[in-house]
Image (tube, rainbow, N blue to C red; front, top):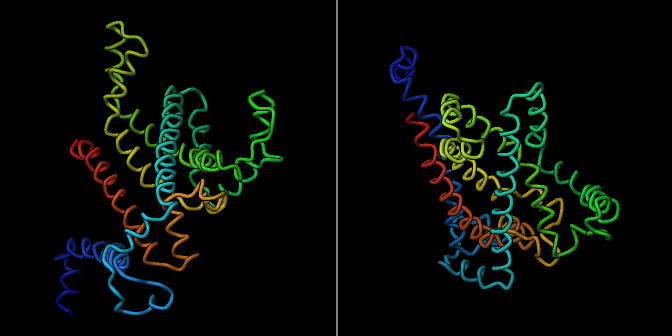
Length: 300
């Protein structure tokens, strides 16, 4: 033990120590819980067997029972809609804001900083704010829609099965726009200005410069933004818990909230773990896409 300590003091093996500490952290707090979750999805786990070391092994029975539920495919459909709509909204608005602030008008840096408020706010606080905005009786959104003559009647965003999922999507888009804007702004700032000057001398207009220079040069950044957006969106739980609680009648229920319902409402921890495993697989696919999209940047 003294030899190891003296070696670290002398600088020998210091690099190994630096690598071993985060590796141990990831092993005990990430890898082992992941393995435990996968094993739990293959067992029968309830309140009475949760504390047991050895539990009944049921194989893929939990997966069969989860997907045999009548609401299973509705939840999966809601999850896909939630992820796709959220990522599309966050990306398009975030990209538009990044291009807007990229012009560098006076005060743009200060104004851009205000958009970070949504990103640093806790999800529960964001959900509470949007609860008031989306209120059917006195909500600000309904007031604006009626003022613009878009609708004549109040829309009950949180309790109407047609709009309940979109209520959470709107709140999640607002929550993630600033993150997309910042990452895309970094990507835009890395594009050499000489390319635009040369294209402008060749007679290319704004749209041509955008399609032939901006988008191709932003390909890796866009891939990273979309991949991270998918990961963060699949982790979103707070907004559902505060705004709709997955209702009414599962119309706004998604996989991450469904896993929580199984585990902490039905106390069937095995089925909650089963849904989590399915989500982990999707997140791993998104992570691979993210790594591949940023590989060029790392090498460059």
